[in-house]
Length: 390
Ligand SMILES: *Cc1c(COP(=O)(O)O)cnc(C)c1O
Image 1 (cartoon, rainbow, N blue to C red):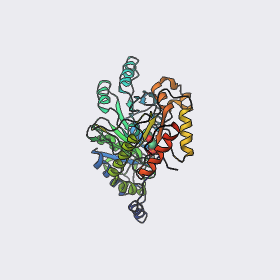
Image 2 (image 1 turned 180 degrees about the vertical axis):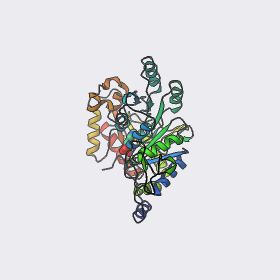
Image 3 (image 1 turned 120 degrees about the horizontal axis):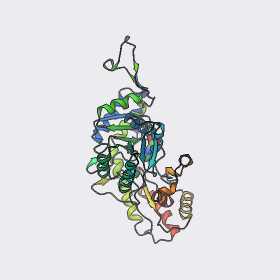
Image 4 (image 1 turned 90 degrees about the horizontal axis):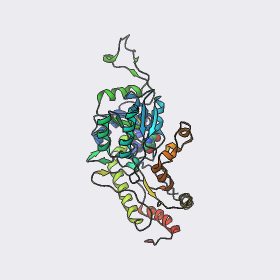
């Protein structure tokens, strides 16, 4: 099976993890700050707080902005469920803005309309969570203009997008947001096994994130209300154990040295897909422009609007039988039984529904060979009766 995604692990990665295992610290010691420094060096953000997953990162990012009961958080339906669940963990409610048909990212025109209505009803969101779907940045300048008009905060779900660039800046720079979250799950651009991080330029938010990551406890005498002795620590907030281990951080430091190479090869493969299927009636994703350079976490092809019912699932099943590990990203969150019980109706988000009925993620990973990619394309086009180059 050619998988849809796969990590790249070198001997250097393995040595880095083993070195930590032989050292004094195996959780949140000196290597976690080194990993955080590698992320700030890449993104240009002032601060980074590494945690045990992007899901945890989203949770504490929202909490650090004061999201709680009575607040509303908006995201888009085409995302992993964690983007929306994080708001519910905080006791807030969640709502969705439909996507753009061509970029799969939150549609800023629909967002502007929804904000106008929300203002009229006194129900403006506290936070908007744009998802950089497939690794391509949302239109952050348009979002920033709306943020200035309506006063909400912005947490980027950049789980797909470490290594991507928007208007000349790395995603994670937080030039147009309060916070940006990354995921280091094995299918993502770099991996720590499980892991996540939040970047920000706000020192107060960074301190809050660090506190929430570790039970709300401080050992810094300058922050404590009293001091009973050398053993003393204080819990000042209700936090969590969301710490990253030293093994994860060491793998992360080692992986970060190859970030540019990872993205470059992914881009090459994406352009190659574009070339190989250009003469078929398959819809291809938007390619990079100078303004918007994707990290190419996913290559999502779509069947045309007028497909017959079940055509996508037939093609999907056929490709799986052929040993091609295709996938679908994502089932709209609004379709999930849990979200239907909260009152969402998928028909409220017709662009997401239409996308979902026609999308297939083709395999794309750093170690994928051109020959494997040719095999994917051959299996994809053969049953559809296209002239291929093979
Ligand atoms: C992977 C992913 C997450 C969750 O990341 P974890 O590190 O697995 O918790 C959240 N949002 C999006 C868009 C993702 O792709």
